[in-house]
Length: 159
Image (cartoon, rainbow, N blue to C red; front, top):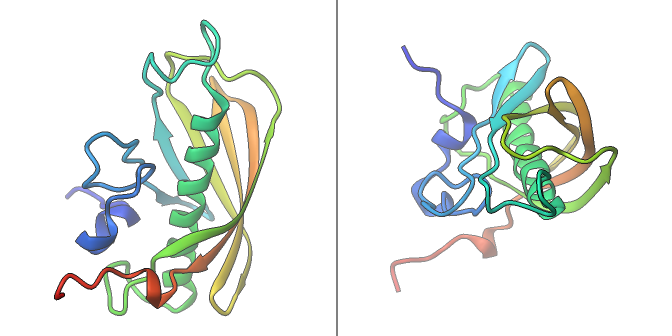
């Protein structure tokens, strides 16, 4: 039985995000899962995600941190409510704040590992710390403040 990522449970009309949308063919399509008390995701940057020869562009790293942070928020919210992902109403988060510290150059052409730790859950807000590792070495660290998606952002396709 295949384990589904939190992004696999996002409603179709909320699955087009460049970083984590499963319906965005040009996007990263990252997948976030629980791994013990942390969340985990893996991503291999494409050759065109280059900054300088051999290294990943920092904007890609920020994008990965951003979307793994919102996925971590959704996973944490389901867990905090004792609910399974996919149960109604769905949790979908957007980024209120993103901070990324680049600790070392991130090499291109290898799989990156993202790990998320929940720092705080409060009402409609989740704060997480996300690390990006290459070959077991942390190359970037981010802090994501994610808030539940406001109603006004939901698409109304009936008009």
